[in-house]
Amino acid sequence: MKNTRNFCIIAHIDHGKSTLADRMLEVTNTLNAREMENQVLDDMDLEKEKGITIKSHAIQMDYSYKGEKYTLNLIDTPGHVDFSYEVSRAIASCEGAVLIVDATQGIQAQTISNLYLAIDHDLEIIPVLNKIDVDSAMVDLVTDQVVDLLGCDPSEVLLASGKTGQGVKEILDAIVERVPAPKGDPEAPLQALIFDSVFNSFRGIIAYFKVKNGTIRQGDKVKFFNTGKEYEADEIGVLKMKLEPRKEIPCGSVGYIISGIKSAAEVKVGDTITHIARPCDKAIAGFEEVKPMVFAGMYPVETDQYEELRASLEKFQLNDASFVFEPESSLALGFGFRCGFLGLLHLEIVQERLFREFNMDVITTVPNVSYKVYTTQGEVVDVHNPSGLPEATLIDHIEEPYIRAQVISNAEFFGPIMKLCLDKRGVLINQHYITADRVELTYEMPLSEIVFDFYDKLKSVSKGYASFDYHVVGFKEAKLVKLDILLNGDPADALSTLIHADHSYDFGRKMCEKLKELIPRQQFDIAIQAAIGAKIIARETVKAVRKDVTAKCYGGDISRKRKLLEKQKQGKKRMRQIGTVEVPQSAFMAVLKLD
Image: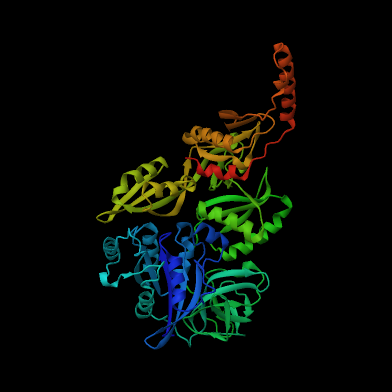
C-alpha cells in the first residue's frame, strides 16, 4: 500500500491536462511508441473532435523512483463546468491532485472551483505551470498568482510543458514524494467505492471502484451496499489502456469488477461494494448529489422507438451519472422522456452521444423548469412543460422555483455581473470580499432565468473568471404567461414556453424572427405567430418558393399576366390548407441561443 499513489489532474478547460497525461504515460512506458497518439485517454470520437474531455479517464502506471517501484493511478478529469460532477467523483477517489495552470492565461474560474473541491476533500495539491515553452508564457506572474491562491512556497510550483515533455519527470517525482499513500486497513471488512461504470454488450456492466478498506479477490461473493444486490466477482483487474485481469486488488488501489450485471438500475455510482460474509457496517460517504440545471424533453423521431430510447437512456446513465430522466408525453411528439442536464453543453453532448453510441436520433424540446400551478378549485398541479398547463380561466396563480445563487468573481467585473443578475430578476442578498480583489455575491433569482443563457453571459461579462453555484430555496408567486408559437395557425406545442409577462413581447418577437431564418421555405406562405391566449403579439412570414408563371408572357396585355398569377394564387391557397410545416431540430435548439 505504501507504494501506491492515487491522483487526479484538475484544471480550467483547455489548460493542457490531457496532453500532460500523454507525456506521463510516455515517461512511465505505459504505452509503446506505436500505441501513442494525441490525447490518448480521450477515447470518445466526440472528445477528439471537440478537443475537450467529457469523461474522467482512469489509468494505472508503473514508475521507478530511487530504486523502488511505485504504482500510480491517474484520473484525467474534464475542465468544462458542465462536467464538474465528473471532477467531484474523481476527487472522491484520490489522495492528491495535480493542479495545472496555463502559464499563458493564468488562474481562471474552473481552476478555483475545482481547487476548492479538492481542498474540501483534504487532497494534497501539486501546482504545475504548463505551456512554459510558449513565447507568451508569463511564468513569474502566474507563479505569484498560484502562490497567492494556495499559500504555498514558490519553490513548490513545478514548471512543465505538455508539448515538449519538459518537467514531466519532476511532476512524477513530486507525486511520489508529496502525495500521501492511501489510508485504509487491509484487514478490515471490504469497503470499495464505485466511481464510474460502463456498459459492455458482451460482458454486462463493468464497474470501476477504489478499495478503501479490505481486499477484493477474484471469485469473492460481494454485495452492493445501497441496492443490497449480491454477485460473484467473475473478473477483477486494473485499468491500463485495456482492462488487465488480476487475482486480487489490494487496499488503496483502483480496479474494475465484472460480475455479469445486466440491468442498469442495479449499479449506482457512489455505491459501496462489500463482502457478503463480512459486510462493512456503513457505506462510504463523500459523494455529492447531482443537481440538474436544465430540463428538456427527449422524444424518439419514430414513435415506435420509445422502448429502445428507454433502454438506451438507461445504458447511457451508467456512463454519465449526472444525467437524470423520467417519462412524459406531448401532443405533437407522442411519448418521450423529461431529462435533466447540468447545462446546455451537456445537453448537446448527450444528444450527440445517444446518436453515435446507441444510434438513437432524438428530438429535443425547449429546456425549462417545473412550476406549481394553483387552480381556482384549490388544487395544486405540478407542471413540467407548458402543454400541461390548465385553462387560463382555471388558474388562480402560478409559483416558480427560486434559487440562492453564489457568484465568485474578480472585483473588476462587479458592475456587469450585478447588471446581469438584475436583468434576470435577481435580488442581491449579500456581498462579501474574500480577498482584496475577489468578491462573492449572493442573489435570489428565479431558476427559469438561469436555464437558458445565464451561464454563457456570466462567462462573457466576466471574461471567463466568474464561478457560479446555486441551490433551490423554494417557490414564489410569479406573473407568468404561456407563450404559444403558431405555424399557419396551428400551435407547435414543443415550442411553447412559460415566461414572465414583462419579457413576453420581446421574447415572442425574437422567436418569430429566429424561426423565420430556420424554417425552410415551402411552396406556400408560412405565417409564424407568437400568441398569448388569443392575442397575437408578433408575426413573421416565410415567403413561398414560387415559379415565375409570367415568364412566357413577353409584352401583351396585363390581364393575361393577371389571369396566370390569379391561377397560381388559388393553387398556393389550396396547398396551404393541406400543407404541413416541418420544424427542423435546429429550431428547437435555436431558442436557447436567443440574445
